[in-house]
Image 1 (tube, rainbow, N blue to C red):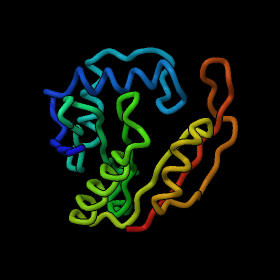
Image 2 (image 1 turned 60 degrees about the vertical axis):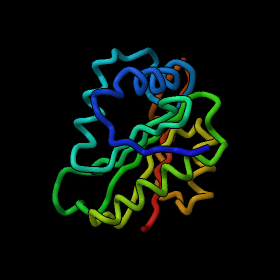
Image 3 (image 1 turned 90 degrees about the horizontal axis):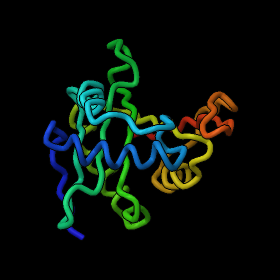
Length: 162
């Protein structure tokens, strides 16, 4: 499957929010419990401003999105970014996430990023496994700090040196 990584823009609002909202309503991968309005997309553009952020396209249209964003706004942390990505249901486990990670790593290196952090729900074992397979290691764990769908969950922090 040929993928195109198109810079994230307002043209992707509806597709991106549909993908994100699927995970919000059906999993622990996104933290909201309910759909967010399409206008929330502006937050994705805001938090990723100046960092690589892409809509992932295939012959079937937009199948996901990915971004780096500042871990912390203070300049002393400028070499560290946080990563996020979401793909349409049925498009995981096909190598798309690995290609998105590579695209973000390559773009991050060009802007001086040395470390990438991933914040993952403890209930999202698929994502934890994906990150381990792609060179991330666990660097922090906050047990039981969230509650979604009536279930307590924690946050696992993972890090990768570029």
